[in-house]
Length: 430
Ligand SMILES: Cc1cc2nc3c(=O)[nH]c(=O)nc-3n(C[C@H](O)[C@H](O)[C@H](O)COP(=O)(O)OP(=O)(O)OC[C@H]3O[C@@H](n4cnc5c(N)ncnc54)[C@H](O)[C@@H]3O)c2cc1C
Image (cartoon, rainbow, N blue to C red; front, side):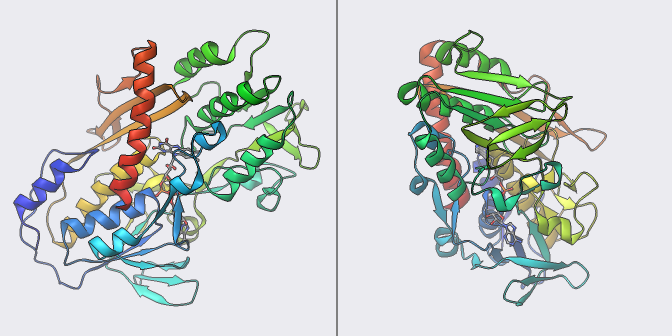
């Protein structure tokens, strides 16, 4: 049973979770409460661990089709040659061995919200008292012509880490000196808002050393992007941005987005008929909540899952909570940091609800680090809380972006970035 002292100790020791009120009392619940979690990424793994830490009498089952999870954070660094897939590979052994989480290696194919059942790919059915859905994103292939999931072996998105990242990296290594890399950035909202721009930086770092005549063109359907002034400052410093000899070019085309791809010739075509030829083409598609969330009826018309933020419970289906990239926590970005923060608040809410206690009044945190070179890091941080209108608001005066841009401070930011990756993966998976 969870004591008040134990609860407060956990709350205060949980990185990224600020608890402003806590009234949990001894349990009144049926002892066999079972929480099922779909998706063992940063959201699902963190929720599983923290529910078991908060109340070991609750059974937790974590379902994911893969035995190994490869972290997207850090995966852009592979292109610079300063990271590898093995170091980014995580598993669920610690969650099982240390916290007693029941791991099921299956895909969830169906959610029955009335009967409180999930069906797995092997047709097994599992009953839940509360369900947490954290399946990440899927792609809106309908927004592009000439390209879809089946041609990602030619045109990698590398927006789910693993074989796609390796494929893009191999294409970059095989490209001639003087080649053109085109990155097609996605429209908002998408997972990891600074990700395409960190990717351009990491590819530029590699090209500058090994293929210095090469160019990177970012075709962007947005007119601005995350940490833009810090990226541009870094690109000017390291990659000649803005000069006639710049390695990186950013072309903002909000009224003229890419709508067609000739996959065999790696030519992208925009709405007005402009054509750009790539030697390596990294098309990152528009995004929506993962298929299972859509199929279950958890998504709104925009393709994301609306939730009551203080509990993460779906506003469309009762007893189902949605966290991480699939959910709408706007203005929180879709990041691993945010998924971890949402998961802890969800864990507190689920434990409280099962114990028939009031839920806490939370605040959420996010920091997104990016590398421009291995010695030049930048970051943006923010704290969020519920406003009177029950919408999530940024806390005025909190957070901000990297302020000190001297060499030593930027090198420290790069170190913080690496240390953050170690600590978040341990917090979520160990
Ligand atoms: C290149 C790149 C770099 C990034 N860098 C950073 C960074 O530096 N910092 C940061 O904070 N964030 C970063 N992110 C964002 C981060 O990866 C995501 O925001 C985070 O992984 C979201 O966690 P999640 O749990 O919502 O989803 P995911 O981590 O995507 O996990 C979803 C899981 O659900 C499983 N799943 C899906 N459908 C089913 C189903 N039907 N049944 C069972 N399981 C299912 C999947 O197998 C997967 O394991 C980056 C992303 C990218 C692409």
